[in-house]
Image (cartoon, rainbow, N blue to C red; front, side):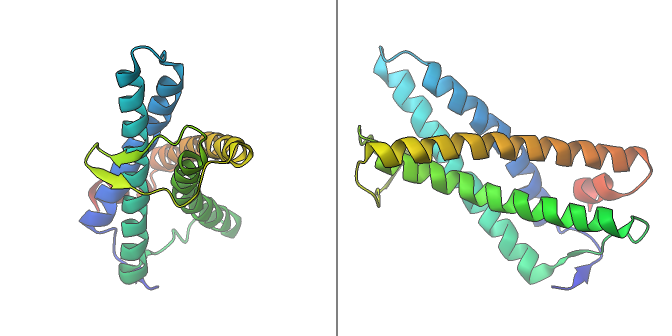
Length: 180
């Protein structure tokens, strides 16, 4: 992967779409479990919307990784100490991993759920479940999905705060992701 002069428009848009969808999806996840069972329709729709956003996040991140593999990324800021560049690389790697793992765990959790509620992307596209119902597996996957989602949001918040810190210090990191 070679260095490029800046992030492409597609890379920047994908970054911001995912940055908006992740906290929205987390909030919707908390809302859906708190909704009462009666009437059932709002709870069902909230679950389907949460799952749909998860599918979208997974697809956008996969697309972003493909673009990064094909196009590369801007060179690292040579003015940063080596340990900060290594830490940033580690954080980005973990963020990408979580952005892929959390939706997969959510899907597997839904597939393992004893209730076997179908997964419908935006109520249009049915997604078959690859696993059968298994309460023990469901409980484990649901817990992993939740805790890794919380970790993802915490790490993304730290990522955003560091971008703001670098921006305040006059480094072009945030401008590069905003305008290219």
